[in-house]
Length: 123
Image (cartoon, rainbow, N blue to C red; front, side):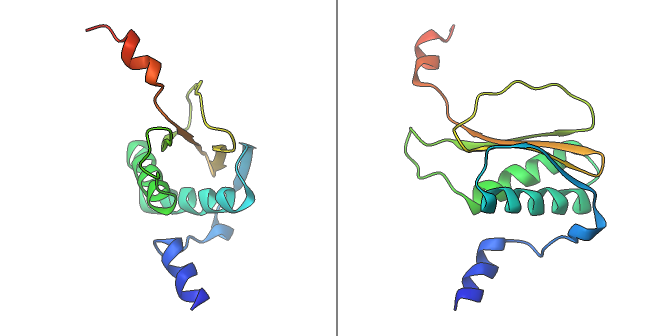
């Protein structure tokens, strides 16, 4: 029964981790979340050539594995992928990882919209 639940939680067929050069550049995630981020990012590299497709896959897969509770105070995951880019993001505590798989960088983080953004938006 426990194996069945583990299989259901893993999502798509697992990647070949030994086939990739994996580097965790920086991470504030719990060990299990980080391990799953590595697996999802490796799957993305194996399945897609385009950075946008990789980022979309990682975001959707991580949202599926760790869904929002639906409250306004809970955020969703975002993913930035590519070989050369700069990024500055705000993220929730323990919800950020910068992982490099082969030559592709992945920044995976969870954030929520600030309720103050609505008040200051220009219409």
